[in-house]
Length: 74
Image (cartoon, rainbow, N blue to C red; front, side):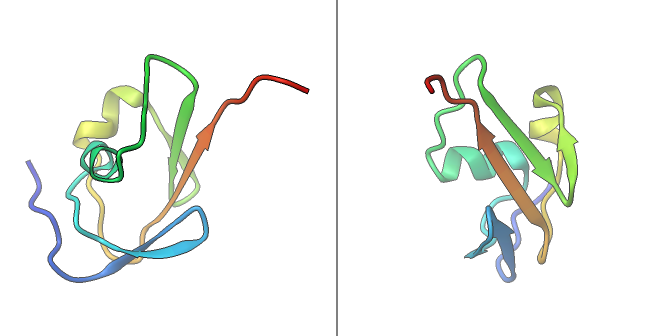
């Protein structure tokens, strides 16, 4: 398992935040993102990261993460 960076920052949905997580899964847990069984997608540097790869996808300073949640309604 990758070690979290103690320094550096990443961009999350357009916001500059400290990088304190080693993987996408760690970051989502750290940010208390409710992932549920469906309805959320994560892109890292413009590429969608499959849910099955979240725990293996390392983060590094200056990465750009987009977290998208499906919404119902009109």
